[in-house]
Length: 246
Image 1 (cartoon, rainbow, N blue to C red):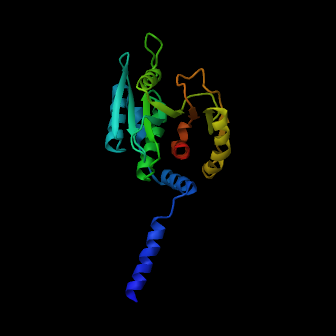
Image 2 (cartoon, helix red, strand yellow; image 1 turned 30 degrees about the vertical axis):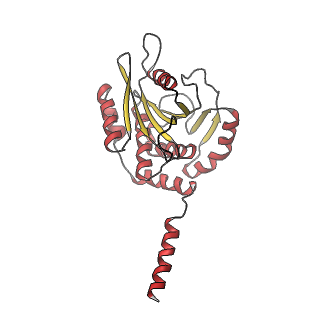
Image 3 (cartoon, one colour; image 1 turned 60 degrees about the vertical axis):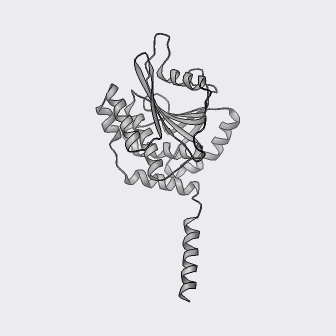
């Protein structure tokens, strides 16, 4: 009798352990994570500038967030930083980007927060994610760090599925994702994503121009402008959106 009870208990535990985590579950986990976890990324990034900021990002990506690979790209004496996180499919020549300018410490902090949340919550997307912290400075040919990184990607034959760009300085409305995306995909995102984000607050998606002539990346770009005074909430929604589109 005892053996039978034990087998039943093991079967129940196995079923619970194997229960598929739904997107709604993940969004709730992300929300709770940022309500209860503190970090000093933004504070530390504001305190460091130039090469010291780059060194800080490299250290955190390598030692705390466990990037599989980290490298820099120099452009007229200024470095951009790239960190790779392979998905369930392993390393591929196709990947998504999570990006912020190196002169925007709050945006860089949100990117770190998102990557840290994925690690701590064991969120492992299907595809590879690369984090990009790029130099906004332009060289004598007018090429910025972002442009230089994408030129290298193009020349290596790799493909960016989309770029999720985070920034804190702009005049565009807050709580809004701007989708520089093909209409057929943008319409689907406009339909599917908002209900998942609604537990986090009132967030909107708006279709932009594809390709955006004012942006150096000739690929799908999703842009979001954060409120630096509420980085916990902004980190939660960027993490949730990144989880959904990945």
